[in-house]
Image (cartoon, one colour):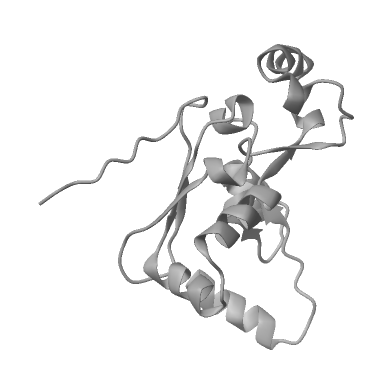
Length: 162
């Protein structure tokens, strides 16, 4: 049975469906092995992982919205700035997820984001919403992606003349 059909079947049963949040394939596999009938993933959650150089070094990740997702945002009255702001507000990693060595090293590189803060506080995916680059690309289907940078890098946008 296809996953979407299975989820519809679970929801139609009228019972509570516990679906833990996952941020990568490893946590998804752990949820599956634990026997949960469903899981969910968010783009912001997937982008904000401790393995992303953007989180470490404040790069400018690229958010690629599929046309259907872009239409959903537009029809809901969201601007590009709104999309950037919400992703930036939600794509965060708690400081206690970083090793002590990385917190110390990153405190030297970016003291404002990593020094003198409680371990329960969160660090954003990048320094500000303006650091996110959002484009619309792709074909049919609700497929979007977040593409990290190497960190501490910025995209260069140049007009292409025909």
